[in-house]
Length: 170
Image (cartoon, rainbow, N blue to C red; front, side, top):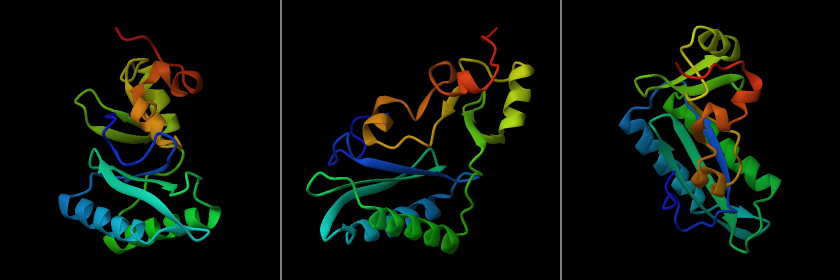
């Protein structure tokens, strides 16, 4: 991931990644980003401004990043405010999220796919996914992890290699 992503924020900024269950049309991406930016423009945590930014990656992942202006992490209440804004925007725009126990990965043609864990293991057993399959980890929590490649990487470098019996590529 590019180090220019959210270039006004340091690596220590927190990130929240919400994977959509289908590619988002351009108009929905724009509306989502605009609404989140309007939220960020007034986002506070214990009377401190929260510096933040939002984007949609790969037409599927709504990403919000933020850090208080004094360098501290946003408070729980500020995080709750962000979560409520994201959920309300998703409802308004009719965006559905990927269930939390699904696995997100790139298919052979580069498409982002989401399947239940059992289906991912079946695909591994069939050789359709391997240690080299690109997987996504939306549970990362820092901008530095996002920029450093922990969000999107070959399965062999991710928790997926420990959780699934993945073959080496043929």
